[in-house]
Length: 272
Ligand SMILES: NC(=O)C1=CN([C@@H]2O[C@H](COP(=O)(O)OP(=O)(O)OC[C@H]3O[C@@H](n4cnc5c(N)ncnc54)[C@H](O)[C@@H]3O)[C@@H](O)[C@H]2O)C=CC1
Ligand SMILES: O=C(O)[C@@H]1CCC=N1
Image 1: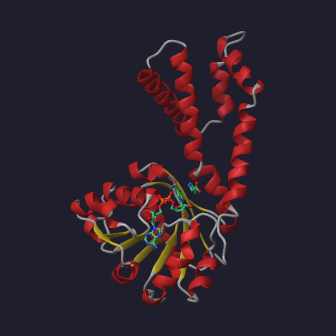
Image 2: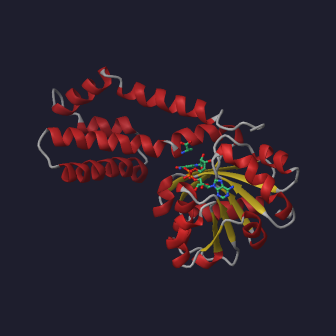
Image 3: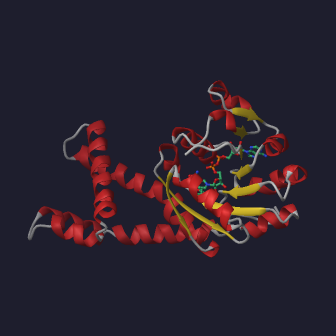
């Protein structure tokens, strides 16, 4: 699926660039249809060489775009909204915010405009078409939600949720990718301690994690069902697994996700 719409990504840092690269990789956008903004555009020179439009002028980028993606940090948002407000046309623009902890209503309130806003919470695997993206809105039309879903469907799996759950989605899916990466890293460190070179251990741990995830996704089974198939009686798996649990493995993950969700809810200062 390709589109003739143009998109401006305001704040081309980690997630903004991952999104841009993912959309181009998926074939839905040509680089020429995407404007990337950043205060220091030197950091985007390679992307400019690859055909993306690059500018530090957010208002110009908005004027040229059908879809405007807000991808700055929460503490950078109010200044950006103030800057682009005169360039936003309520009847034309669809705003997509990937910013954690900021509601659709917060954005309209800052802009003092009744523009349609959709929140999207992707993760960095969007760069390779493997994001888990949650989307939510409080005012966008079904047609615009369809547009946003189709856009993110090209770069992973998308689900629509209630906006109240967006901070939870941030913790589980956007932060979550870091939690799983750290688990894989820890497994590889264990692998090195028991005899493998570091690069082999990392590859073995990553493929094992991928296989575990695919068992759940492809067979639609439950983790414990799959774990039961691995744990031979009096065997080495249950011995290792129980040792991890005695050290708080599941508890650490649950507590970490709860802490991230609590933090996600207070990232944005409306007055800031
Ligand atoms: N990094 C991630 O995995 C995810 C991040 N998010 C959200 O995305 C947002 C961005 O996060 P990151 O990409 O990690 O941060 P980042 O710091 O890498 O990117 C933000 C970018 O915005 C630029 N910027 C700041 N003010 C600007 C302005 N006025 N005009 C143009 N560019 C401006 C900065 O120079 C920077 O390149 C945050 O609100 C975060 O909550 C959401 C999902 C995942
Ligand atoms: O760490 C953060 O605040 C952002 C939001 C989700 C992923 N990164």
